Length: 145
Image 1 (cartoon, rainbow, N blue to C red):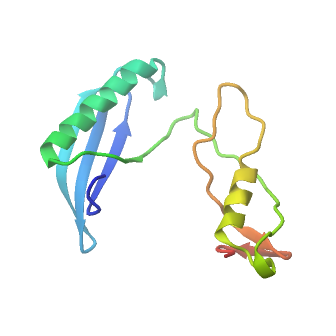
Image 2 (cartoon, rainbow, N blue to C red):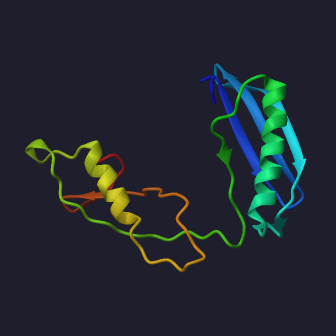
């Protein structure tokens, strides 16, 4: 979003698309923009026509932008359905930093290595969520830097 105090969310459902913009101040959110559009291109929670789905999303986002008076540049998107799956993977990288200290670039490399898995052609990785890191044999490390 163009303004740091605004947060946008998008819900793409089978019957409608909802875009919501909220202003967050002092841990409290106030809705300042709301846009809905009929959902086209979806069937039982699955995209069957990408172009129609994109048009529905644009329509809902445009309406929310007009209501709040600010452009939406990023959204939080909830993705669900029987076609969404999670998969646990492991990856190993050598630490290359000075004095063998783990740096942010090492974390990025291990996350990229965790993405290297074989997937069927109709699947893709949406997001990598690290559950833990293992450093020098110690597991349960949440932030290795």
